[in-house]
Amino acid sequence: MIYLSGASHGLIRLFGAEGLGVLMTPRHWHQPDFGMTWAADNDCFNQGDKFDWDVFMKWLDGLHLYSHSCLFAPAPDVVGDAVATLRRGEGKMQQIRSKGFPAALVAQDGLTPKMVPWDEIDALFVGGSTAWKVSGDAYRCVQAGKVRGKWTHMGRVNSEQRFRRAYSWGVDSVDGTFLKFGPNKNWPILKRWLRNNLQGKLVLDLEAL
Image (cartoon, rainbow, N blue to C red; front, side, top):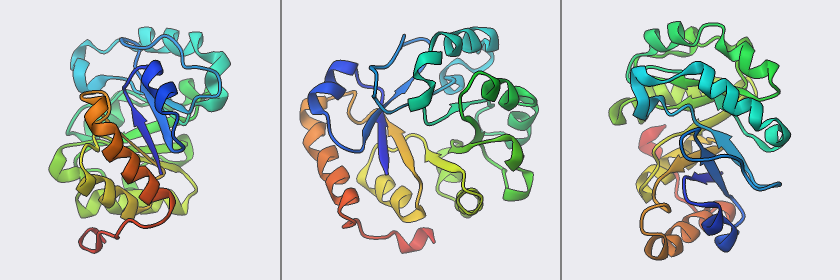
């Protein structure tokens, strides 16, 4: 499982750990380092109705040379509302794919596996409210994605408990601000999570299953 951080390139290069990458948004990043594992974030969680699709697509155009190392780029979403997210993202996955990036659907509250346009996406990004993110419906969506060979990701993972849950679900990557804020204090902790993850030592969260 890969941990994607919003920390600076300098920190990522300094720590240089296996299993560590970056999550980039148009507001905060221009380009990754070559060879650096990364994923795009549409930043709808922070921008809401101010999200500008044209700006996002222009940003992806500028990152074409780095598309080979991109894990996913999500279509626009509406926080906490699966139906509105599907409506807002209609036709957008194909446009993302046309630029050479794997397209992701952000899973929001109310989503079920039957609602997901699986043929149109390459990745499933578990967003939504905190309660929904760890719900049975979210778990079932992740498992349905894994069966179909889709990349699965969980957002806002900033505690060991959440990290363990994501691991127990078998997601491919997670993101969080744990390293960005307080890196000197939190890096040794995150490094232990990553080391245990890579060595298969994390205890499964059986309640989540």
